[in-house]
Image 1 (cartoon, one colour):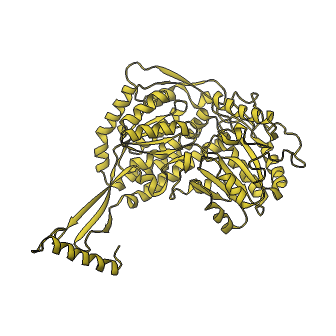
Image 2 (cartoon, rainbow, N blue to C red; image 1 turned 30 degrees about the vertical axis):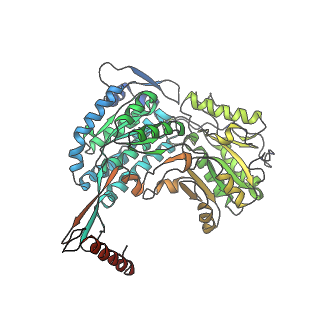
Image 3 (tube, rainbow, N blue to C red; image 1 turned 120 degrees about the vertical axis):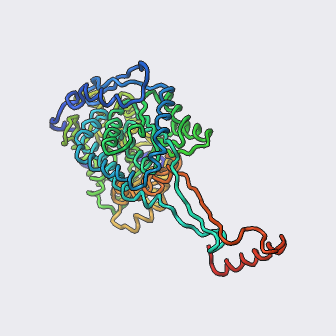
Length: 547
């Protein structure tokens, strides 16, 4: 290993110059206050299960720092009520043919595309992300709705398997819904990670009790309204809102299965609580994802994609890239191209297309991002682009930042920043790059850049991540909704998308029918004769290659 586990060369690439301020995007679009008026907030908040006189918590618009909404908070008793309501309607929903349930998803798909501007306004207002990055959520949910709307019947249909005795035993694998899913979703992708994960649960015949993050609950509530308009029974999707350490355990306590997306620390607690009740759980957790730029990569394409890979949603994306591993022979050229593109990114907070990057979501995310950069610079890292907050644009804006010369003792090296910061490391051999990419306890996503597709796939097979994108950042794998997506190591358990993404919400049931003869001594055979006959039969079946 060269400087992948020691100090990387801190010299700035030739021609890079000192980092300048990122330009502001042109204004445009409605204001947050106009897009999210009190009447809309009141209508959506009515969908929260919160009884009595609940306390109200204010959320903040990240783009402006102003109050966005006051949302009623659920209690553990409300969570219990939500599960009771969901359990009442779930059996009738499960009794419908799969195609009837799938039709709701297909109608939802059309409504979402038609009314996407409403969703985009809410996503931007609650998260502060750029509109193009908000559209990624609409795109991801539409893909999932179409896929499961079309493919659910095939995933869930009864499957015939070989029986204990050929011809005489018929075995069928059936899929039954778990019941009521406890679904805990985070703030960073409030549409995709609330309704996107709920869609396969619904079409599999389940009800859902969803606890979205309070900061982004309006987006989840809007999606719930749209699904109800598409034909989903209203009580089938319950939404509870409240403090995570209080409401989260209550959701796990009552759920028949738990779907969680969030931090690795909280994911461990969720897994332990679910295991204590002997219920299953799927967990998509943190990541410290790497992008490998090989010596033969198309550097212009790689640099352009690295901008998306590192700075989409201001880096607040579990599958975004936080580590750039670049072959030493092309490092200076690649970094010059990448840094120039990064410095040119337009930052802005308008509810309209045009900004290349938006805001961080909160003061907490800003503090972590600033601390990681400041500590690294103080310890000797070099800023190639960005490196500072932009309060002139909004309270939580931080420039897209490239750090060179990062060493293992720096927090930014091993901890997940979850902000617009990427660290650069150089390598000499592919083996070094693979070892470095696999050097963290995480294993969520990675990216490989090479002109040789076969070489890229061979390296991908050596990477310990749930998804690997060759010549793309994350969209190719995540958008392939027929294929599973999830993490290895401390990045989680289970998968979304594809067969695994829907079958996790079901129980497998085997129904075996025996005909003509029993699997026991019969026709006058004693125990010893029965054993001898069956032993001979086993030899014959093996010789005939029966499975």
